[in-house]
Amino acid sequence: MFGIDRLRDFGFSRIIGCRSRALEGVACGLIVALAAFSPAGATPSAEDLEVRPGHVSPNGDGVQDTATLQFTPRSDASADSLDVLAEIVRLADAVVVDSLIAPSRLPVDVAVAVVWDPGALLADGEYGFDVTLDDGTGAVTERVVCVSDQVAPVVTFGAIAPNPFDPTSAPPDNELNVPVEVVGASDDRTTVSVLNAALVAVDTLGVLAGAVDTVLVWDGLTAAGAARASGRYTLRAHAADLAGNEATVERSFLLDHDGPTFADDNPAPVYVDAFPVVLAGSSADNDVVVSVLASVDGGAFFAPSFSTGVPADSVTWEFTIADSAPVPSSRDVTVRAEDAAGHVAEVTYTVGYDTPFPVADSTVVVSGDPVPDGGRITLRSYWNRSGLDVSADFSALDSGWSAGRESVVETSPGVYRIIYDVTPSNTRAPGASLVLVSGDTGFVIATDSLTVTLEDRGPGGKLVGLDRNVFDPETGDRVAIIGESAASVVEVRIFNLAGNLVRRLQGNGQVLWDGHSETGATVASGVYFLRVTVDGLEEIRKVAVKRGGGA
Image (cartoon, rainbow, N blue to C red; front, side, top):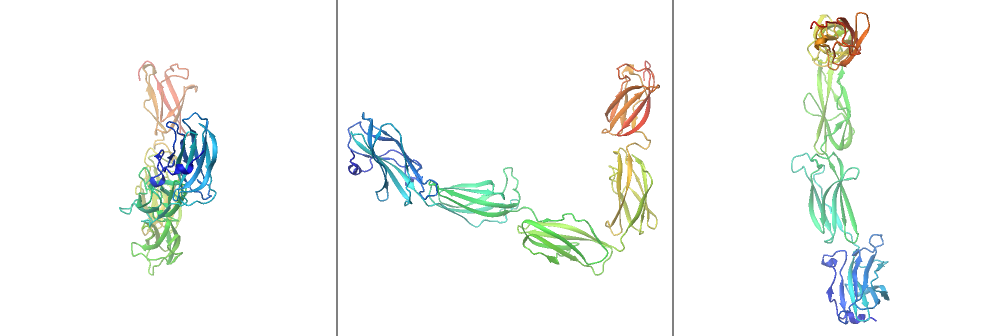
């Protein structure tokens, strides 16, 4: 049957397939043939000879622990079967380490697939799958190479900088530098990704081939060019070789282009009648708050009288404001918080000092409730002090109001008269609340309010206007019933002198009557009453129809 030893004496005669890992290998391995004496034209062969995968890691982890040898026996002779032997040879020392197919008689043209499971750790290196075929006229040995590799690539991150990282800062600090080193083989692949706080990949920095020592750069921007949200991110480098060995390393960093936040970012004024006063609050940051300081009226910044300590994700603080000889006035206290990236946020407290505080006893409407568009409203406001700076906010009543249009006069100690002319064409405001403010030191220290109704009609009491009082429908004339606002819903019911309903119309802003009834007939000459309803308010108007005489 086989002259195996005699075949090996002849060495490798031809390369049939692809190269081994040592020769920049690929998965199908290395196929060679060991030739024997055989009649010309009668050489057996292992067609489609391959081993998959071409790289294995037989370490028992369930990933590429086994390899499958595949081929189809062929023969140029007329035999329908031939003798086959398959052995595994460690190429480093040409030692046979396993027999995959014992000497067997196999049919020609029938595919063969045999799984090799080493069942134990193998030394890393190249292994030849030698398939010897003998059809009686000659014998040949063909080889395909598989690589055993149980060593994973080694990947490490260097010092990532800057960290914290702000993509909106000036160059070069607007880019994150990521040193990456991979120790492995030329066919290893390493993917470096950026993950958000939910560990979802948002960007890929690069795919590295083989052993490298390089620096990758990330701009921290979205595909649209906007800076990504501030927060904690993770760099992940995942390296894998052809044998399925893997290595993953991660490194977190902070992307921060926002300053700290305050629990109260719009504090109400603080009014006191004695010092010292304590301002309390808290500041937080997506990284850490490194300092919290305060300044009074633009002076030097000073430390808090109490703090839970910095650096910290969240800092609770108190500032004590003292004044040994206070005068009635307001003070702006600016609290400044800074994070590790150098971002600064500020909030300003207004501290007002006075004694005694102004107090409103009452405010009454002297005239103008309800007040029509363009009408005048007069108020009288009573306070516990004279010499106050009293003003009224009419914005809830009048969309055209602006500060300073009202007239305020102190008619007697602590009694203030306020006169205001409402601008025309306002929307009706039933129950609008007016706010009165008072202070004597340039800041608001007391308020009062009252309710006034704005009617949506002019001083003349007219809800709508008519573009004519007489018209002739036979000439195509029409009368327009026009509301003061284009947004008003105008409803008109038209009656004759006998009180009969002639026509019903409705529209936004205005309606047109062409002198016809609901049936489409032209009405008779005479006077007609228009019952007009606009936004819930009603009035009666009249118009004359004069047929055949023009308008």
